View 1 (cartoon, rainbow, N blue to C red):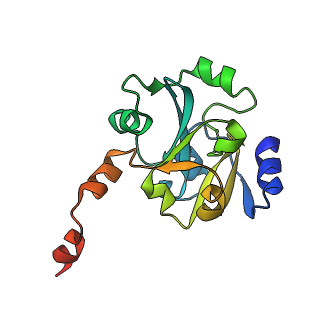
View 2: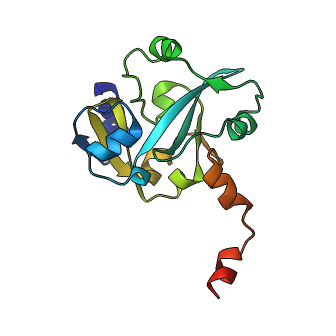
Length: 169
C-alpha cells in the first residue's frame, strides 16, 4: 500500500484513502465500503505475447477475453495465474492491484465504462485499503488505451448513434 500512496502523492494527486474490512475481490471491496459495484474498479492482469498487461474494468463486470485479444493484438492472450501475479507483483496482495501502469510498469487498457466515471475507487495494493480519486487525475498522464473490455461495453459501442434518443421519443 505504501508504494501506491507514495506514488500518488509524488504525482501530486488528490485522493482519499478508504480503510475497510478485508475483501479479496473488487465486488467484495465495494460491499465492504457500502458502495455500488459500478463505483469500484478491478485491475485484471493478462499475459500477452509481450508480457503482462493491466485490464481495468468495473467490479460488477467480467472481462471478455475476445475483446482482450483484440485490444492486445494477441489471440493467445490469457489470464495471469496466481503464481505469476505473486512473481510479477510481489509487493501487492492478490486481487488488490491498483490501476497504475507507470507504477507497475505494464501497459494498461481501460474499459470505457471506467474512463467515463467522474471518480473511481480502486484497491491500493492491499485487500483492506482502497483509494478514491478523480478518474481524470488517475489516467490523465499515464499512457492508457481506452477500449471495450466487457460484453456490456461492446454492446454500448455497437449501439447506433442516436438509438437511445430514438427510443426516448
